[in-house]
Length: 289
Ligand SMILES: C[S@@+](CC[C@H](N)C(=O)[O-])C[C@H]1O[C@@H](n2cnc3c(N)ncnc32)[C@H](O)[C@@H]1O
Image: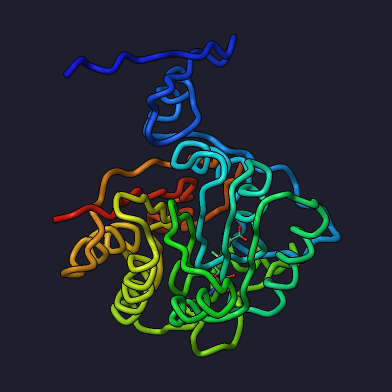
């Protein structure tokens, strides 16, 4: 059989697009740029009329991931939607998306933000617990969807609630130190190992709704609590890789560097406590074993 030839479309400064690109709509030049293992994002200051979410990630960061892991028209899922950054990025990039958020206030805020933009793609936000992800999607979408890509940021265990100088700074800025009082809220799970287990169970549900070979990106971090570091990002990577039939294959980490965060006096003249100014974007894939 004659070998199929590559054909290219010239996008000027963006570079050349290979029409056999299986994953995304990027040129080779753009692809290589994103493959670097770290990036810097400095989110603009948030507008006052928006509901302040304590752990919102920048839309520019989500846009870069969505552009790399999907093509136009594909379907994206965010099972911890917050105030809707993933849906806004999906709409802007002509992708369809479903987002699930437990807190009614954040869900309402996400809906308002999406509505303001009049996007032309399907953007379905659902208020509920991702423990029931499959049923929620079936009853709200009324069609069977397997997602091309999942990107999300679960609560960082108890990090919002813990009593520290950072919390004082949050309160002064009018940010919450708790997502909700709901028992399904992963941010309210007291025990660290319980948190790791419950988080992994939610990603079992996500596994069932993802296309074979689809990617998953989780933005999370290691957290400091009671004088020690809990390796939450690393335990997230390990726990999702050991789920039997529903094991995700860990592909890589990409580090989000936050060089715009002010330094806070932590442990000065006493002991080591870092100003943690980076987060982990863990990249998994649903692959046949
Ligand atoms: C780190 S925040 C996500 C922020 C989001 N990426 C944004 O940019 O706005 C985690 C979110 O997960 C929600 N959440 C916690 N437990 C949940 C659950 N079991 N099901 C669905 N959402 C949950 C919280 O209310 C919170 O808004």
